[in-house]
Length: 260
Image (tube, rainbow, N blue to C red; front, side, top):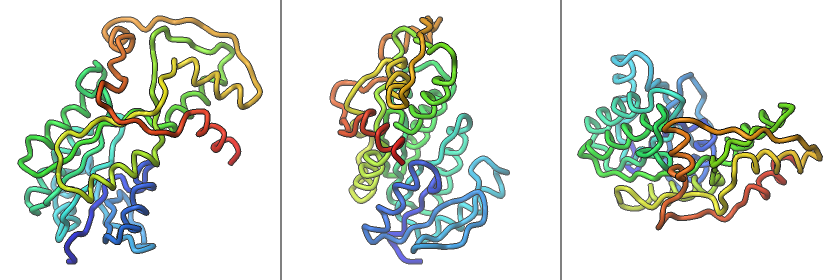
């Protein structure tokens, strides 16, 4: 196989659809791990594999997918199982002698007492302890997720206003560009987090959506209880000092998304 080949997990997802064309534009051969059969297209080879499927089958398919691969961009993720999937990938990458493993995580992975964040943190540890040269980038929630939440919330008769819960959404294209930059560079370990330019109360995101739609709703103040509420009110999910920030705002994203 041609060296310098890049394997992308999650290459057909929201982030992967932005990353893959950038890798191709950089002149790199690209393979995408996909749960279902897909025809090769636009210089991208699709190989079948499921990181959360039968472990023996998944490992065998990963060995084939990783043959001749120098760099892996691990973008696949979901509500559950990110730690399990990452450990399986790490083991296969070690067997294949991968030279650079790039992983996308989430800001606050080690601070938010929620299952999704804990799995992300466990996945980070699996990468860092793998013995492989690696880079880990933590990013804030994408505008796309904020849009989905705002769109669903806007259908309610009252807009929930969870006190102290804030997001700092970032544009997926800016995250994709940063990941490709990191993949093309030398392994750097944990790099500065990447968040959007502005912090919003959750209620503000929905109100911004409603304003563009020409609608309005009354608010429903809420208090998120327990450890989760305290963590959000403390801003544990927000970019820490020294983080990088994208430029594209929520308002700009909304205008483009709704115009389309």
